[in-house]
Amino acid sequence: MTMTITGEWLIASETRAVFAALSASGAVPRFVGGCVRDALIGRMVRDIDIAVDIPPEQTVSALESAGLRAIPTGLDHGTITAVSGKRSYEITSLRQDRETDGRHAKVEFTTDWQLDASRRDFTINALYAEGDGTVVDILGMGLGDLNARRVQFIGSASARIQEDYLRILRLFRFHAWYGEGDMEPDALVACAGLAGGLAGLSRERIGAEMIKLLAAPHPEVAVDMMAQTGVLSKALPFAEGIPPMAALVAAEGRIGVSAEAIRRLALVTGETDVVTVGRALRLSNEQMKALRQRSPLGYDIDDAASARRAGYERGEMAARDLLLIQSARTGEPINTRHVSMVTDGAASKFPVAARDLMALGMEPGPEIGQTLDRIEKEWIESDFTLDRATLLSGIQGRKSA
Image (cartoon, rainbow, N blue to C red):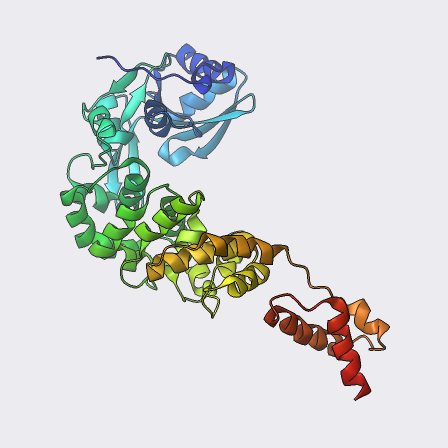
């Protein structure tokens, strides 16, 4: 049965312009990979990749002849970024890998679609589609595996991994996003035996894959298998044991929050210093800040007062995430009342400012900061009940004494 994909992106004038430019040069362009895969299962298509049976230099010429911008983003590997209107398209020439060292490949361009499909990692990544949306499953396995929510290597799992060790992490990431049920046993055996190859990859590549994996709606099977095969400890040397990811995902579902990679990473990394994690995964400053907010509190959130305190100290979202992580680690159901108290605490405002202390005669300097810290601690310990007048009267009393 012929399968077709549809979508606004497929029929958009910008897309049609790119296909027309390539076809006018004598090329056969086809959509490939993620856009085909996601369209088939009804997910939003974000990136549009196109495969073409001409060399990259000819791709550039065809685009520019049609008045489209061509950016040589990966010329050595045959990749050109085409800009049409406000959309961009990654166009890659058909190729086969001539030499690989586990990280990089020397490629040779071809016009053979079978060769291009065969050098890809997973069967669900070797799905193409014509300009009209007709799906082309050259290997004859991609559609069946996608429908079965099965992620498997093309050919020998060991051979595919040794071409690029990042494929170990990609296997788990793809299962988290596209797989269901158990992972393929032969792939897991290959990953376990070759996990040492991850040491040769850059931390940026490992970090990017881990963040993508942890952002999946259901990464629990993938994370569990990563731990059992030893892949997790190779990718994240500070990870200990098997993180209770299934418990965290279940807790997220109970209070209706969406998947969030940094929350899941905080569960996996536990008490590991945030700087250590950030350097190991080359996290951005924004990601580092978010992870720091989700580092252990030093106390349990076990009553309304501690929930309000957590909300005030870490902010609503981070404190809620800490509640979820605590629930996952202890196995205790999350207390929805504590979630509400976190919100209350996050909305609390410390009623005293530096100007109040100066009005009492304090000179600007370290003493004001120290005093504010002290009375803020008293205010928190009172469960935010001490008002401004009471806090300031305590300062006046000490000054009089």
